[in-house]
Amino acid sequence: MKIALIAHDGKKADMVHFLSGFKNNLQRVDVQLVATGTTGSHIEKAGFEVQKLLSGPIGGDAQIAAMAAQKELDMVVFFRDPLDKHPHEPDVQMLMRICDVHNIPLATNPASAELMFKALTQTL
Image 1: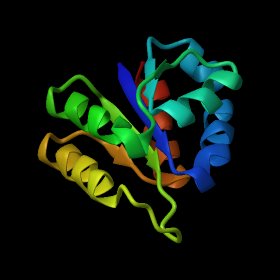
Image 2: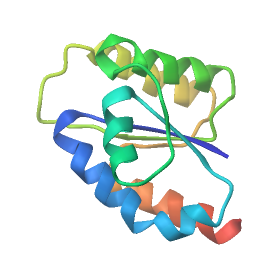
Image 3: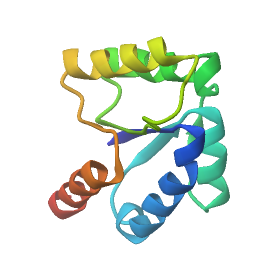
Image 4: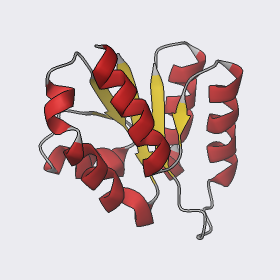
């Protein structure tokens, strides 16, 4: 199973905190993590093995969307900051559309991500 992880700047700490709560569960299932560059660096510093792509604003969101379109991802977790402006918002919208088109589960906040991760770790 391959999970893509993205977090806007104001949500990167939330992403690391979220993943830390599932660290033991993720270690016992075969999960590959892939993330946009800066988010991936934060995740890596927290002790996770992660494949880092480009930073979101310079193409990382588009790389993850391409992976989703090619059915290379099983899940996308994107902690968005809805209260801040993002110059790469068209890329964000494109990623969300691609997930919908290709039926890729997409969590945009910790509550939905928790439901998906609990289901993942219970079924594997």
